[in-house]
Length: 75
Image (cartoon, rainbow, N blue to C red):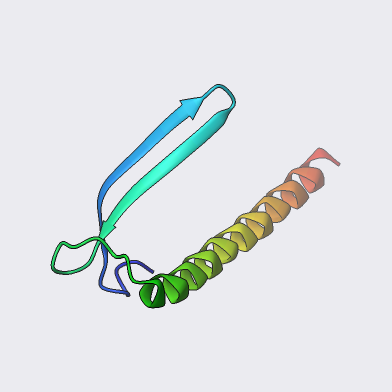
C-alpha cells in the first residue's frame, strides 16, 4: 500500500511498555520528505486500514481451516 502510493518506510521502531506495544513508522515520499498534507494522508489511511482488514480476514480464514483440520484428525 505504501509503495503503491510512492512512499517508503525510512525507519521503524517497536517498543514495549509493560503489556503495551507501540510501533512507530517513519514514512517519506519519493523526494525523502515527510508526508504532512491532510489531503494525502486521509486516502492513505483508508487504504492502509483496508489492507490491514484484509490481512485479518485472511488470518481468520486460515486459522478456521487449521482448527477444522485438527478436529477431523482428532476423531
